[in-house]
Image 1 (cartoon, rainbow, N blue to C red):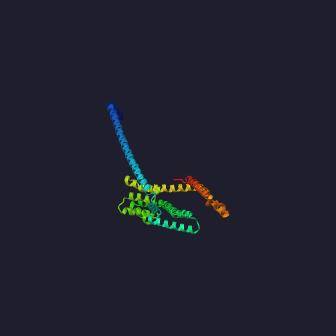
Image 2: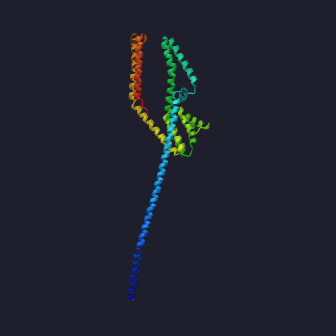
Image 3: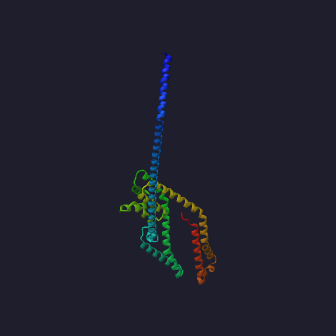
Amino acid sequence: MFGLDITIVAIFALAALSTAGLAYGVLFSRIEAEKKTESRFRRVQSAETDQNKAKAARDRMQELSKRRKSVQESLKDLEKKQQEQTRRIATTLKAKLMQAGLSITPAKFYVFSAIFGLFAFVLTLVAGAGLLISLGVAFIMGAGLPRWLVGFLVKRRMNKFLEEFPNSLDVMVRSIKSGLPLTDALRLIAAEGQEPVKTEFRKVVESQQVGLSVPEACARMFTNIPLQEVNFFSIVIAIQSQAGGNLSEALGNLSRVLRERRKMRAKVNALSMEAKASAAIIGALPFIVAFLVYLTSPDYIMILFQDPRGHLILGISGFWMSIGILVMRNMINFDI
């Protein structure tokens, strides 16, 4: 009985196996066709996906290219406008007085210069100098010295601005990251910044209050502070307002660039200090020698000032000295 059951089970198993083999043999071609169809469908779907990705990538590149061209055109327009503005205001006395932080008008400046020149003329004439020498001293003291003093004040104020400007940009970056809008960040610098940055940002805020936009108000700062760093700042604000982007990151990068420029400028000044000292000694040596000769042998040196031929020699010597000083100045000054 037990052996019979095993035989029946074996027969059923062989029958099932034979049926499965027969079904597989019949359906093999159909299964392979379905596999090939599915594989082909997957390849087509993958190709369509790749095409869509490629198309999306091309669209992104075209959009980036358009945006880059727009930014470049905006930069060119801003640079052209600022160059025209710089050429228009660079030589005006009013702009120089504003850059120096002086509140006097050009008319008052000319009056003070004339009074100072007249005082120097009278003092030199009373001291016993000749009329021509007195006129020369009056011209130098009335026309040259006041303008030199204004230039000195402008340079000193620009240096102070450069020292404080990166710190103010860092404050703006932290303010914007904390959620404040750009206008509030500008007001914060105008209220709590250090001079002269505080005064210039206050002018920017006041320009906004009279109707100017933020980029226009920042661009006007270049009139009072004609520095490349201010030009960079106004360009960043203008580009951000036109094309968008992360303003805090842009200002942070600008602050870092300004600090690196300042370090490079200090390094160049340190490396060129020896050449500047040599140029100063060479330029001052003829005057020092003439003064010492005057102290030891005044009759020997005074012939240069009393004889017409001495005047000619002094004029030619002064001309060549001026050329030498200008050449040495151009050799030791570097633009960064």
